[in-house]
Length: 223
Length: 183
Image 1 (cartoon, each protein chain N blue to C red):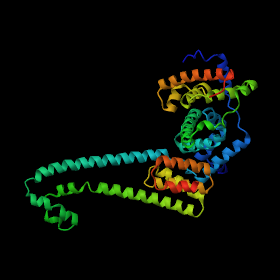
Image 2 (image 1 turned 90 degrees about the vertical axis):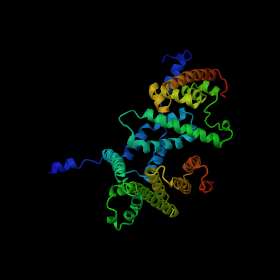
Image 3 (image 1 turned 180 degrees about the vertical axis):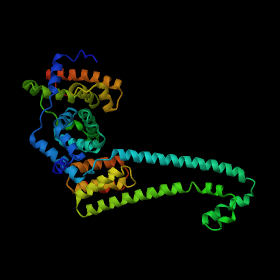
Image 4 (image 1 turned 60 degrees about the vertical axis):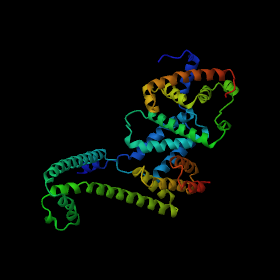
């Protein structure tokens, strides 16, 4: 881009001089580095490097399993369609009664013919079950982590509480307990005497959860 | 065997945290200077630099450390300063009353001929959106395409801001040199 006519040689010289980055006073440098180190100590990240290939492998495995599940459901759907056509000759009463024995698990041999249809009707069920189980586990892990943070906070171990809060934030950034986590972060920072950070955390909390019932308490602790 | 043991006893590889701290230490002068250029008040810079570190550390594992870090840092600093300004404008009903960042009077600037102070005072008169582009391109020599990418704007938008920012900067320098009071 060509220079603006207003950008004359004096201004050029001024800008050139402004490119020099002044050296910080040693005291300020030491204080800033100490704060940064304190953050690292309060919430240490994993000491071992993150195994990216493994994560990539995990992603591929996850994608493959999803693909298999989707393909399976298509296959079952196709089978269902076929078998529906095949068993359409059977009396409707028998077809309507068939899922009950399978569901209860007894006298499955009473209705041997439409097995495929029965299986096809039951196949979609495991998927939501697996999903909800994963969600339950995730929630349990969230809860466990936050409980530990709460215990640390109650015991006055604020660095530990902050570390656990940070870990929760890393693992479940948009988890179901994110609101509780952020409120706990504000309170912990307040109690730890890190007022500036507490104020920032409170502002972020208020932005993210403006109608939270936890907001007044977090703010009250800070005031 | 002893030789083999010697080979195996090499020091442990640096952890992500330690390498992040090293980078932060290396770029601390630049981070402070950038925050100041972007309009952070001197008494706020330490806190904001800490925010930069927090962001840097969070994203450190995904950063390509073989590339220059400064364009990334100035992008982070811009977002942090923007958020800080937004918050401050909500918290302080009359932001104009916060005069802590007025470093010197125009007369003082002229008399002392501190070009850095004059440039800073001129930069302070630019809106943050244009000031960021001017700082990144003119002072940090970051190519305009990278500037646009770091600020999440189009290249055309970056050029437009740069052009207008240059005009405003030149006008501000002229005004300050003539001894006009900064508004």
